[in-house]
Amino acid sequence: MEDNKNYNKEELIREILEKDNDLENCNIDEELIHELINGKVSKNINVTHDEKLTLGQRTADKIATFGGSWTFIISFGLFLVVWIILNTVILKNRAFDIYPFVFLNLMLSCLAAIQAPIIMMSQNRQSEKDRLTAANDYLVNLKSEIIIEDLHKKIDLLIERQEEYKKNQDLLLKTIDELKNKSEK
Image (cartoon, rainbow, N blue to C red):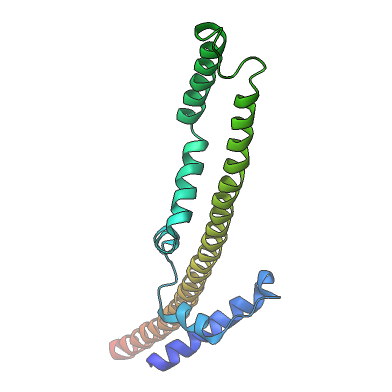
């Protein structure tokens, strides 16, 4: 009975996969079908993805997170204000970077040149993580659809059997009434 149940599920999975327009160019292999029948397809992408990061990748993510925060913006704004005040007011005659602040511009350019690729590396990893999440969501949704279709077929079968039982019950009640009427005569 179990083999027949899996066979029916496998037919159902193949039927759903064949209907799916998104899979026209996709290769669904037997392993995926068996995972959908028996296995747990959902994964925590954050755990599996974050475990594989190198030290440089984790550092780039932390730098990108800090570089896109209000803490960075406010502290960098304060640094610029202190730099300008220091070189124009406090060290007016002995300023190490006089107006138009060429050294400050050089530092800002270097910071931007370093920060941009680091942020792009972090965004590329986030993009890959999003693709994995979308693929995982698709598999979970597909498994849910398969389970719902399977339940729907089982409910239809139960309703069909219930109607047969109702017909048999009506027939038995009718026969009982006939026998009852014959016995009363």
